[in-house]
Image (cartoon, rainbow over all chains, first blue to last red; front, side):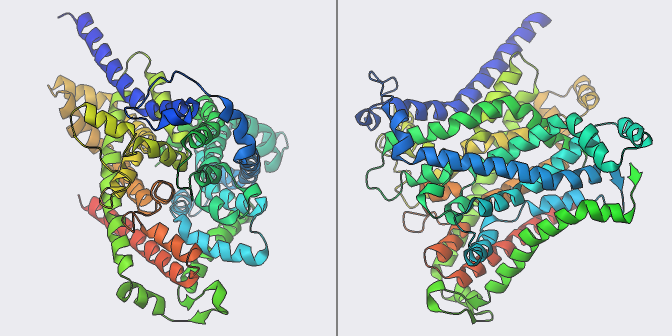
Length: 280
Length: 289
């Protein structure tokens, strides 16, 4: 067997394996999409129907009103946007300082920050629920945004610092010589250069806001403040017959925004995570 | 890197320190303090109990021990499999072949799927009467009768694990991929020239090189599975009975269903303690090797 033939077979084997793995990963998503398009009676058949004869789109129109999904969508978007903004404001300074300044204990900070990430949500949920109840912050955007910011900030700092480390300092030094103070340097010069790192960190925060469940479930008490994850779970709870078609439609509606965004920005996210990790 | 003036350090770090102090450190102390009280919203003012909650928890609550067993079983069943599948897929995606980037992107897409959605997706898949899992198992003659994945006490937790075998792939894979890419090519080349086949290279060169990365990933997997809540709440809600109830859910139920916040805080404190012990022991074992 020539080297070329050997290589070809190797390529084919690898591609087949990769295709199998990818197929297995994507299949549940495709299946829930198919379920959302079937007529309700075709969903619970045995044997299962893979390619339905009749397709029913109407659910995608009615779900916005019926499940309160339009409102949930809006809530998730507002919370996500506000969290991304707040996280950035809080995380930017420490990330820059950790990257550019040398001081005692600076090597412990990244680890300490990451430890914060490992706190179980339930341990924070109880004190915050009681506190928000007393402070009247239950069922407000502010309360939830505050929590999500707390969860996002550590990784945001970690990823941003990792990315900033890869930006050479010559430009900043030149700017300093020209008379800029640190604040100006940070905002005018570093910020535009750090956009890829910021993009990756933003994607992480967005995913967190879009997925988080236990705080959203507990802190948002009324139907009109619920976020998407909670709405998706509520659809099937407390009912004797699970409304499969509605359920599937709800899942697709929640996934449709986040998946393309993820595909577009995942490169930045992965670079951000590995940049942070490789420093260890 | 500049040597920074102390004032500048304070300026840059005080917002974050204050923020994390208020949002994380203070509430944790508050939680631990709460665990020493009987705090039930409908019963009037909180009442100091000392270690009362913990005594009740360990001696008068048989459900606690069931929940503890469930949590440990779930954690040590799910995490290793997630680790292995992530490693295998990462090894595959680390090879160079046409379209690798596309496959990688598509495999990772599942990372963007919320856990609760993953649970809702697996509900119909695991359904006893019309689910695809049973369908494929029967068609392949692996089983004769449909398996009641979600309705059987002994299988409920395993069903949750199955959904997490799917949802957990991107996380393990991406971390292992980053680790694998840090292995020096020269080392692998030298091993290949010395006659090592692919799996020998993996076992004797690659894995030892990324030992610290393996440690980090496995610790993270253990922790995330130990405290997991979303999928279990959505898929089985702890049932049937208490067969899939885990510690996080038990603490949640005691707080928001039974409204006994002090007791719930005690359970949460136990979670924190076990978590710390797990991390401590794990680091010890690995540093000895």
